[in-house]
Image (tube, rainbow, N blue to C red):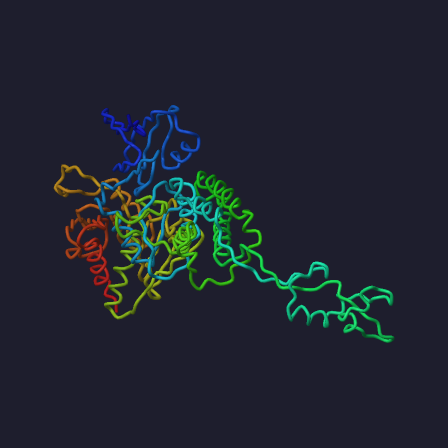
Length: 533
């Protein structure tokens, strides 16, 4: 009888379902699931489960909730796909893909519990150390035995490649057996290896001693040491130099992030386990005499086809490749950490606003504009307070601060997600990964999905408390567009807005045919209303 890995059910659903190792489950974000194991998990397993959001209640039960984190992860051998109800089945992949295209392969999420599918990009970029660390974590700790990096190394260690190494050892004359022309030449050119013979020495009449007679008075000499050609089997081969180099590179990445406090505690614990395994590999006896890899033009036949070697070569190529964002749900999993989808949606909204403003300015003949993205050990990201200046008077900012001390706000510090500024006038766009599926009583609601009134109230705060803030909008994954002008009019389409003085809501979903049509139309209308030269 096959025992399930665990049983699970949503907290509000009393009917439990069974999950078996190898299964793939689709779970929803922001839903609490009660998990019950047939046997208490080990401390190592428990640590990994806590990392993905598991909150233990007893030794064998607990609650699992991914909140706004979406993507793919594993729990007790079961693959979990956390899907977004707001963005649709393919919305997350499209969101990632569009952000990637807009901002030169932004990579997210070094503190989140889930992972996303990724592919290797054709564009040449240096790899991100944290992504390499995630890759090593997969191939060293997460794969089945027999498919791990250390398993392939064990295969190599049992039968490493060898070659005959040509040497010229210096041996005593009594051990010389295989002299060649160079040995004879060195006898006559290396006086430091000769010894003077006394007159009564039995070697004095040797023809070689006679030939080595020199000095004043002349004294006969005889060699005590001589070089001779020899061959020995050596492990110092190009293939083994590659293996040694690969292990050293892996260790360098692990030690680089071993004590980084910005990554999850379980990841730091895994780093120590990986360091122990890689150190054991590096100290293997057959690697002691192996030299340094100075060049790698291409794999040898043994490296490309040998047992263990070919597998390690494949891992090396994947290890050094740039990890791009996912293109489809079926792509191979590299266990990149997932991202809080709400924050990822903020990135997407910023880039869409920036794109819309850039397109509008380009149409006016102001030229092309690019986003400068910073890259570090933990990947690429947008900095808080990032400001992209499109002209001396036009800019788009991500999470700028407005404070009383700077006389930009009259009360508490405020930080809208995105602010478009022109001629000292501001327009806020706040990303809200929330919506209301139910119909509302008033006539402003549509049947599909509308915004939350509480989010619109916050736009009033931005509009009234921030100096020179003309209008504030929420951007959300729904269907309804609305703008309330201060004069009292309610506009249902961007083209109908007469004065940008008020608050509103803009629908934007990555999986729609035109993801940001309303946003682009509004920005275009805004630029036209400002009468840019």
